Structures are given as structure tokens and as C-alpha cells.
Length: 341
Image 1: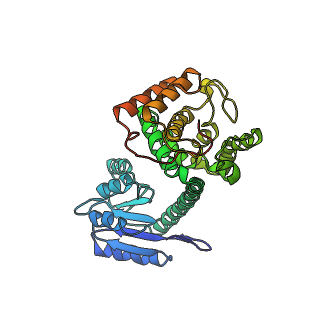
Image 2: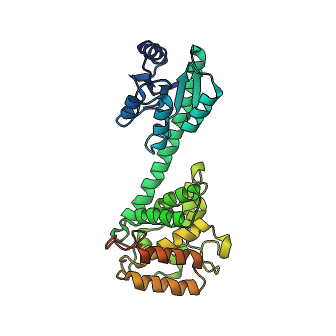
Image 3: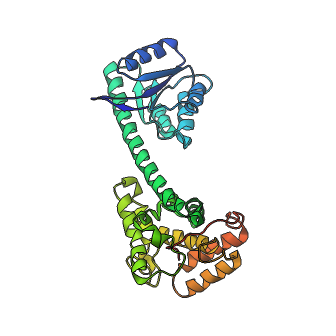
């Protein structure tokens, strides 16, 4: 994979072209820059190669058998495992419509034959740098996700909690018609919403009995700590409000900011509904898991108190009772030890 030299940044480049002479020329130019080059003769082979090899940049000739460049590019960009890989379409075509077709397919850049070698290498360096920064971001996100799961791993009662919240809150968000970005934020927040508990001593986090006033004060700081931990990641811009506000209540009695009503972000209102439900229906150190019907009745009473969003709860309850989401069949699982509801 990528390695940062002094400069340039180099990487593994996949070249797809049905003309052997073109493949050889590109391989010679790119390897001279320190890159590793893999060559294939058509678009289908390029897509297949990406399924087994980590690649940092793809150069696709447009006119190829089996899959042409447009088709191969579209497959690459529609695959969650490869859509972040920059794709350059290389073509002798200069027609405006062809470029529009390439843009629709998701191409990141275009090169026109006959190739200008300086232009080729400049664009390759630029896109490899972009991929390097993207990989850095993914690594940072991965560290946060690992940290979030490590909090869960401290206590056998919380096993699977993060994955359930990530999955269920995203499904509820889809049902409510939230945007794609908001649903992505919910998926991420489900994993890292309690990352701030890293600052909560185990003696408090795992305490089976009632907490003292001072211990509750420590617990109530975890959303603020979690927001602070995740704040450096720009990609978490929509995740931060969920982390900070998923323990707020509509009547202002929640924490950490005592927000009321619509001042609580809708994504936080979605996640808190699922969070409370999961805590009620799973076993914790100080209680057994409530049956689904009992849990929903308890939550309905809390809605009447002014704690949770009634519209979101109503839609959630319909999902649970209709079986449109897998809330009923997940079996016995462990609930959240502290900080739910």
C-alpha cells in the first residue's frame, strides 16, 4: 500500500487497457516514479483484480471488451469496498458527452490520448496524495470504532450493544426518511456514542448497585468527553451532536446540556429511543431483561412524561410490532450497564 517518501507519495496502480503497447508504456512511466503497477486487458479483469488486491489508483481505458471503462468505473464506484479508490478514465475521445458519461460513472479524472507524460504523472501524484489522506482518515475512524467497542468489551453485559444500536438506529432513520448523511452518522454514532466512558472508572461503570450523586456526576460527563475525543475528525461532523445529546430529554431533564424539544438534534432523538429500548430488553447487572411488550409500555409512559419524541417512538413501536426491523429475533443479549434511559 501507500508509503510516504520524501516526496512523492507512491502507491499500487491498476492499469486496464486492451492494447499491450499502452499497458507497457503506462507501466514503464509509473514504475519509474516508484509505483507498483498491475496491468490487465479489460474492464472485467480490472473489477476482478480489485476484489483480491489492495489498490490506490485505477487507470481505465474507455474502449475495452467485456466491460468498457465507463461500466468498470461504475462497478468500482458502486462497491463500498472500492468506491474510495480514485479512477482515471483514459481515452482518445474528446466528445463532451463522453466526459459527461464518465462523470455519471463516478470517474475522478480524465486523460486524453495522446498522453502528455508530465500531465499524467502530475495527476497520478495528486490522486495518490488524495488517497493517502483518505486512508489516514479511515485509519483514524477505525481507531475510534475500536475504542468504542473496547468500552463495550469491559463488561459482558454490554456485548453486541454497539452493533445493535448502529444497525437499528440506521434502520429507524431510514424509516423516518432521514438523509443519507444522517443515516451514516447514526451508523457511526451507534458504535462510538459511549466512547467517553473511557474516562469513567470501572468501579463506577460496572457497579451493580445504586450510584452516589458524585458517581452520577462522573457518568453524566461521558457525552462531553466522547464529543471531545471524536471532534478532531471532520468526517464526524454529524456524529458529534449525537454523541453529546443522546441522553437529553424533551422536557429538559436530560444531560449534559438540558436541551428541550426540537433543540435536541433529530438524530440524537432517534438513537436515544433505540438505546433505551436495547437497555430495557437486555440483561444488566441489577435487573433481568424486560419482555418486549413490557419495555414498550415503559417507554410509552416515559413518552407521556415528556422524555422521548412521541412521533419517533410511535414509528419505532410500529417497526418493532410489525417485525419490519429485527428487534424481536436477536435473542438474549447483554444490556448497557450504565448511562441508558
